Image 1 (spheres, each protein chain N blue to C red):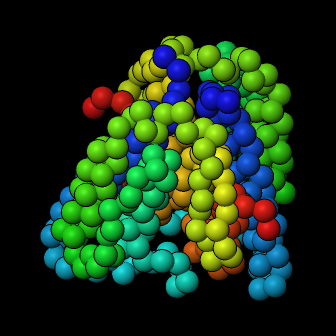
Image 2 (image 1 turned 120 degrees about the vertical axis):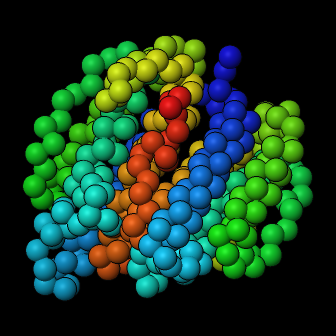
Length: 170
Length: 170
């Protein structure tokens, strides 16, 4: 077996996003125990000029969604970024997993040398599929997943590295 | 060209660690502008029961070092975790890059099915090389790199996503 574009993308996104959904359960339980409205998490920030919790999850979702869509050459589903509750964020995660799982592996495998156009404020850039995945999509995805984790930890939710990696059977 | 175990590991570690070294320059410049001792960053935490800044960089270094060493089947250099300044952390990064670059690509390529033994508090676990890289080493590495970034942002250092990704020419 050899490492493939599909195996390095979709299963990683699914595994990590399923983890984020579990963190949301813990965040709700923490809010219930401390008797605060769990929607206060949505606007939490690590710095005044960093994006809040809600956006971290939206962008992690977009990183996975657009990464898969652009590599496979399929249309990405449109998400409205209108999440206003933990339940909404959980649904966003569910729809993201559903989409990335819907793309056949054969459409992503073999895209190492494919030209992928990445929209940017400075104008679109073209990256090769493999570079796009390893140096743009995955680092960006992990950035927003980890910042989601950091925000929950910063707000008292009891998570540990095991909740992040989930690499070993319990 | 096909995605390989080497191309999915060493160049990613080097690129991100070179980025962390650049963030340290900005952190020192910020401390100088605000007239505080840059060594205060070393003990900064996002939560009282999270590891501080210094450890985030040490563990990012270890994630890259042990990931490469275990896949390649070579001895990892021993680092003493005695860093007490930004300069020491920069040297730790430099030595980590030097080591991972020293391992020939041919020793990492083809390790997809290799059994890798991962020490854990609960006892060692054996993972296949490809799973180890995609679901343990890379997520763990990005976790500590991103937490390093988050700690600097939380402490006022002006970094942006471009400083994290560095995926496009300036």
